[in-house]
Image (tube, rainbow over all chains, first blue to last red; front, top):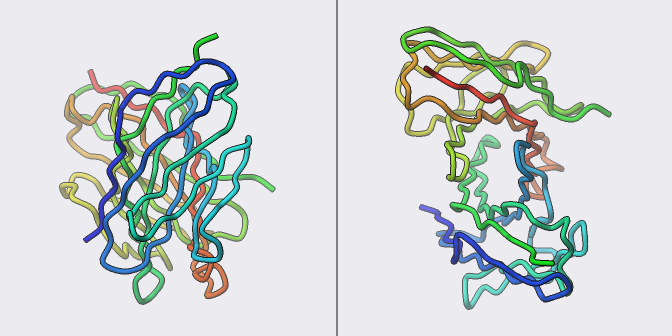
Length: 116
Length: 118
């Protein structure tokens, strides 16, 4: 079984401050991990993904995430928040099964508010 | 290169009616998944289609059905609509090629179809 827990349904940061969105996963096998961003009334856009090539993954818009197996975490960070970062962020874990079937489980999301 | 496209973007249906949502996958993708995202929640997996067959299904009743066409596009049908079916329905596509499996079969989402049941 696999699951994703996002700590904090709402996070507020000041513009220019560090952004830290937490994600912990549970998986019986090494997973693939993703972060998606959803702006209001839009679909999900891929920010970055972890596929075991490197533990520190850099994504779009200055975001990055570090895979820590010992902590089963995949927290999302950005050094300096911009107003345009205000959105909802989803962590997801993916397992691949034989035949190519992919099971993706999403967290409940974290809404990021950026305060001017 | 067109991404995942969905139609319609918004629709309103009456309880008990039926709805069909459509999805065209990203160019080069052969696998389509459907998700339901209720307000304030994360996407919930409905089912996945590959080679015109439903490969896996989430915890959704038989009122939810789908189809995949030879050109890889897909439809989601919901019968006997309930008020609780109101949600954003997201289509996602990915590639089932061996090469892409090695990179985690990245899933790309469309903009979604907003369904309101009244």
